[in-house]
Image 1: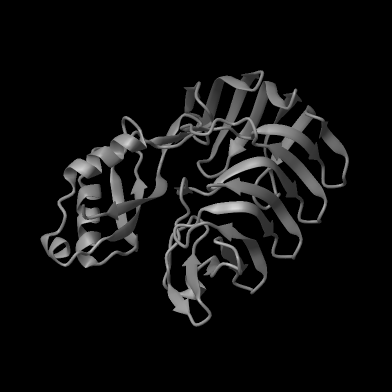
Image 2: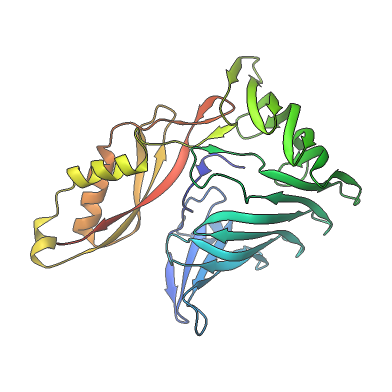
Length: 321
């Protein structure tokens, strides 16, 4: 997982609208938009729905032209995945098969090694629908090594989790009844800290992270906690509702629309790098940026008890009553 974290909503920006009713997006791995194809890590394409469907077809491609992901979305931008999505390694082998509902993982997820063998099966069925804490991983059904030898079977065994390119074990520990149990250890590469964690029936009891310079931080929340506005996202939208001044020119001309903003939530909770990802016209865009820039500080996101910078995006809808 790369930081800046790209959480809650994918950071996607339209770069061109091509002839065959499709939108093309050039993206970095962390979700940041770029205007030049050669500066991107992959290309994201949204195509019109199939006949008798309301879901858009979503495809990601490596710069080599190899398929990276295919799935369906209920929206053009930002994408909100629905149903089955399949991702691929650049060698053409499957990377994972996942199921989504309103952009959230549901049911079982199947992960694979680059050699094509199945690696892990996770189960998202019992996760809470809304939470500021991420469970890593969710229920663990199965885990195998790259030769096919079982490490976790029917939710019991010893789990080993790898980084994105399978070059390093980044977490490991005992699994009982599909849940973490006892002492776990690992390494968060993005912030260069090692950690040890103690679990009971899948619940984190305590964690300790140690940096490469040997400073330590203890934590009792989930290893990763997403940033939030004080009072939650509903409180943030209440702030927007009280603060937005509908542009007079837009009001006179009956202009309405949906602005999607991207921004960075800094380690101190301040919002920076605000940019318009989807425009509703200059006047509405500028007002959305103004009120977001003036937002009170958020509660910063954390990884292993340490504040981190997080990229985020939100839609702001302007409607005339």
